[in-house]
Image 1 (cartoon, rainbow, N blue to C red):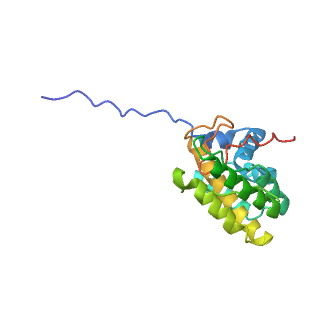
Image 2: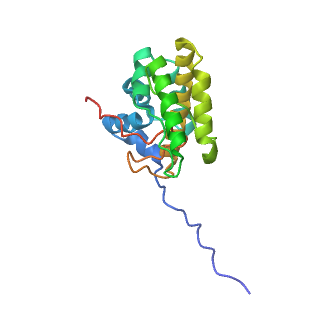
Image 3: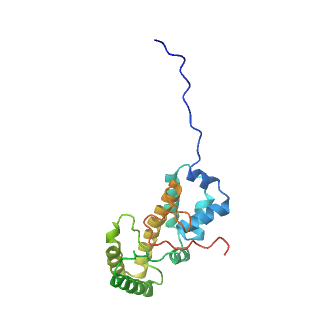
Length: 193
């Protein structure tokens, strides 16, 4: 038995990706989106100004590279947008108190919020990991801690950008899911404010 002619293969229409939308967004929209992930105007401007990116790896490489050029003021701005994570409601009050005390000691020593990438840490180990890291990093001199904080910011930003530009999950605050973030902070201020 013979069949009729074969139908041409059906091709799905091209659907834009979140990276496509980012690459073609107005400059002010791209910068605002980046501020949610990077928390620094200069860092955000630098990434937005070099659009379009051929792929997500190129964008992440650019964001990583720009991290190493952050001035102390840029780093301070990015750090000002970070805070400690919100602990689950069923967390013992002693854990809240210990974390608050450790963070207060860290802020008094270094003048900014403690930042740490938590993407690889199981949820039930987060509090212990944060407390251990704060206590350990309190022994650093300010310059050594600045380098460590910048590296943690780089990792946080990378995780936020990955989630945002892969189109996975959405944060109710800023439209992105902050993987590994130390907090669900309010969005960064809009450009020019």
